[in-house]
Length: 212
Image 1: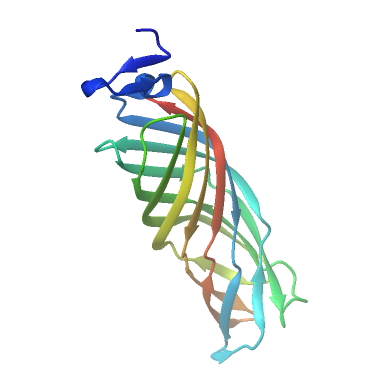
Image 2 (image 1 turned 135 degrees about the vertical axis):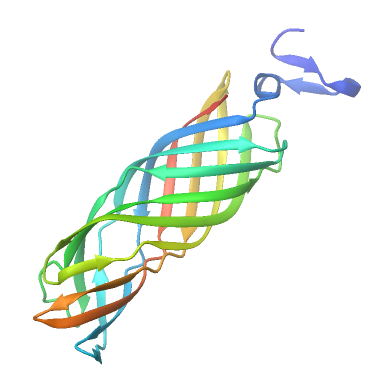
């Protein structure tokens, strides 16, 4: 048989993409991710809650690596790790006149169980669910002093597709949604600040995928 067409057990024809990835248990994805935070926050300053306050961050990008393992043809575990970006945190709403509140360097991660409805053809969609863990590596003070951002663990969901272009490799596109809501503390003018956040990031990724 040539590589363009083969016979599966029972006489069913297989495409080139099916033959090339048959029996491959591992996948490796490398690309870029764009993260957009929801930027919701409720603050208590000196024991008194504020009204109409908020935070603001810019959409930011970082390189990512995804490592996957197929337990069956349709079920896989996937780990996503991002190079820790440093982001600026600005005030918004009724406190928008304040200067930059601080800076945070964090590591975006996600660990999901994926369902791949098809393992044939060159276009292979998938969905997944699991957890995202936000690891905070560093904080730098701004208008808020003694800034501290907690690590956080939250539910995460994803959907995406792989597009095979050649032997054991192709492109991928995916989107993830995580419900990260870390607690933030600090001081402002000597008064204690306690903040409940709803970051809830959307993460849009794309890059190259390899079957191993």
